[in-house]
Image (cartoon, rainbow, N blue to C red):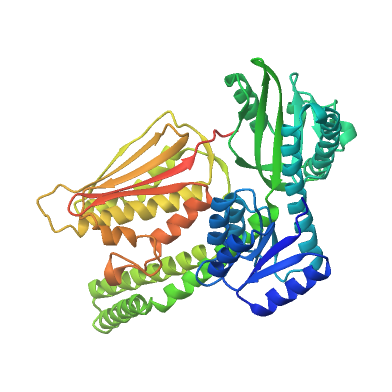
Length: 506
């Protein structure tokens, strides 16, 4: 069967005409449609061999058309045309069964390659049908096909954009493709049949693969993980990796590992996050007028009291005014620091530290103020956490913000019958995180407030807050690969939990 009839679907008529003319000149028969809905009707009527569709269209878009076509005929090959950088939609399309994708503007060479791939898939399916129907007559052809596939697999491993490394049952490297050589910075002649898994991988990755091989007694694919590879030439490459553990009759025979270089993806993600943060800072600044006005009023009031104290030689008034000025200068400093922290990308500085000691330091900073407001601070530490590799500055600043917020929640609570308390707890959870829990019995928050907690410009403290504190805390914890969880109820108080990946200090 020759796959010659192609359906072209795009809401831009000029593109449809140009693609149709180009394909007809290459010997293809074309049918066209200017919308997803029309494309579906033409597909049903004409039964084309291959469909080329734009992904972004009004009404029924390319993804919906793809799903409908696959429901009608799962074996139809659909090539998706997508805008440059539309990674999420492209991945979704491939998950729905798209055979290939090409970027706009569509080049003849790219389209020809995609069509050749689609035709190759169609041809392979037709051959498989023939082999099934005429098995005995096709033994010789099947043997040759196996040889060709074997050659193809070797070529695939060699030309793959993923680094592929395989080990035998003695953990000796037996497969090591060119991309692996580029990524690890080791020549194939020095690795294949020479190195073991401990020679090539970092101790952490090697330990993960070995432990999994011991636990599993059947063919098993590990989940994808992310890590950093340190190469011999000093590069640090972010990678996404997994390993397929191989067994034969219950016996371990080896593993094959796949590594994807995430350098470009991480760069794009960083640029996107940075632009979003700068936009959020811009929005926040536009909403800070009231807060800045309060600071200015405080400075003006303080300076007036200082002037009165000087004029009347009144030491008490002078001290009162000066304390007001210092308090508002601190508010300016905190605001500036929050803006700088949120707008600037920062890599965590991992170093040996003691989480329980950091909590003690933070509590010591706020204890006197809390006691002056009749708020009791208690602590409950897990001594088993010990020394970890973490960014102590991130932990200190995040805890200071959460504990101050908890104290404020107690101060603002209208229920004066309570004995207000802020409890700080540390522990390790079952998912290998070390956790900080800050719990208060203050005023709590309703659902609407909780939904907006990490939004820029939002503050539950009215004119007293900038709306940046929790936003900055969330960013710091995210950079540390951690999470913040919140539980709250009006009148009952709130609980904020910081969870960070547990890793012992070297």
